[in-house]
Length: 311
Length: 310
Image 1 (cartoon, one colour):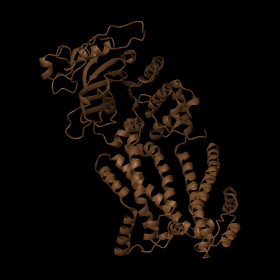
Image 2 (cartoon, one colour; image 1 turned 90 degrees about the vertical axis):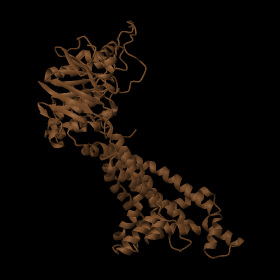
Image 3 (spheres, rainbow over the protein chains, first blue to last red; image 1 turned 120 degrees about the vertical axis):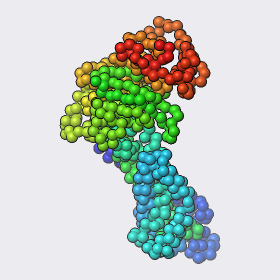
Image 4 (cartoon, each protein chain N blue to C red; image 1 turned 45 degrees about the vertical axis):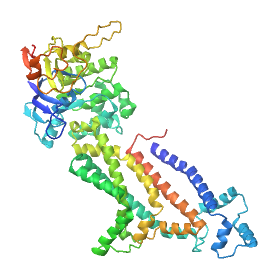
C-alpha cells in the first residue's frame, strides 16, 4: 500500500517536470531557430516577402504572445500532434514513431547487456580481489570504458560481418540483428558499472555483517550475493537511469555503422535544417521515454531498498 | 575440558613471506562454560585471535581445535556443520547488520541457513530470543538504522545466540555503549551463560567490564600473549598487565587517581626484532629482554607469565 502510494506520488511529481521541460524545449527551439516565419517559408521554398511573412505569421499564430503560443502548442502536443515536418512534409509523430522503436530497442538491450556483464564480473573481481581475475577485470574495464564505441563497432562489424560472415553487415533495424550494435554500446557502460559495483562491493565486504556471514552459515560468495550485491547495486541503478537518457536520444555513430534506422540520425538531419516541429517532437518523445524508464527504476529501487518510504 | 584451543598460532596479513604478525605464537585454551577475558590495547591482535578461533580468517601457521577436533584444515562444507556451534557478537555499530534487513530478517538468518523450522516456529524463537535480551515484539519490524546503540547491541547478541551455540566470541561487545547499558548487557551475557552453559571469549580493552564477568583473563601485547591470570583478582605480574590494570578508569570523578608512569610513553614501539615484544616500552627491560625470546611460563597454578624478570 505504501509502495503504491509512493509510485503514484512519483507519477504526480513527473507532471511539473514535463511542463518545465516542454516550456524550455518550446522556448529554446523558437529562439534558436531565429525567425520562425522566415524558417517556415524558406522550408516551403517560398521567397519571404513582407506579405508572405505577415500571412504565415497569422497562419501559425506567431503574432500571439509566446505563452499563448506555448499553450496552443502544448494542447496539440498532448494529442501527440507536433505538426508537419518541414523536411519531409509528413506528420512529425509519424516520422518519429517510425524510427523511435528501433532506438528504444537498442537503448534497452544495451542497458540490459551492460548490467548482465557487470554483475558477474564485479562479483568475480570482489571474490578474488587483488589476485589474477580481479586484475584482468580491472584492466579490461579500464580499456572498455575508454575505447570509442564507433571503433569497437567497426571492428566487430569487420570481424563478425566481413571475416566470419555470421552477422549481417546491414542490420537494418531488425530485432534479430540487434546483438552487435547493442553489445557495442553496452561495453562502455558495462565497464563503468563493473568498476562502480566492484568498488562498492569491496567497501561493503569489509563490514562486520559480511565478514561474519560465514559464522551464520553462508559461504563467502553467498554472503557477497545475499548481503553485498543488493547494497552495492543501488548506485548502479541510478547510473543506468542517467545513461538511458543518453541512449534513448539516439546514437548517431552506432546507428550509422550498423545501418540501424534510429532516431539519432534523423534528429541530427532535422536540426541542421531547423526543422522546428520535428525537433520539438523529438525532445518531447525522448523526454517521455526517459521519464518512464526512470519511474520504472524508482520502483526497482523501492523493491531493493525496502526502507524507502513516503516522507 | 577445553572447548576451544589454539596451538602455536600465527597470523600475518601480509601475503608472501610474513614479517609482521597480528597474532604471534599464541597457545590458549578456553574451558567449557568459562568466560575468558582477552585484553590489550587497540591493534594488539585481539580481534584477529577471536576471528581465528572461529576460523573466519585462515591462520598462517598453527592449529585450531574445537570440541576435541582439529578444525585448522577443515573444508568449507565440513566447517559449515560446526559453525552453528560458534558465533560472534560485534560492537553494535551499524556495520554489524545489513542496513536493508529488518530485525526479523537479521535474527532469522542463522536459522534459515541451519534449521528447517516453520515460519511460525521461527517467529516464536525470535520473540523468545528478543525477550531474553530485553527487547519486545515491537522491534521485530525495524531496520537496524532505526534502533539505538544499545538495542543494536542486543540484536547482535540475539542473532549470535539464536542457534544456542556452545562458544561465543564477544568482540568489544560492550565498548560502544554507555555505563548503565554496559552493566545491563554484561548481565544479559552472564545470565545466558548461567542458564545455557555458553562459553565466551570476551574481547575488550575495558578492564572494568572484564573484571565484572570473566573467570580468567588473557593479556595480549603486539600479537603475543604476555600473561594469563587465573582469576580477575589475581595479582598481575607482567609489567604490561600492571600498566593496563592501573589504567582502569574510576567511575566516580571525585576520586582522582595520581597518574602513574608505568611504561615508556615515547620512542619506537614497532615490533622488535627478537626478544620480548614489550622491551621498548618496559621500564625494567634488561639486556636479556632485548635478545632472548620468552614464552609463557606457569608461575603458580593456572597463572602464566611471559617475562624474564619473574
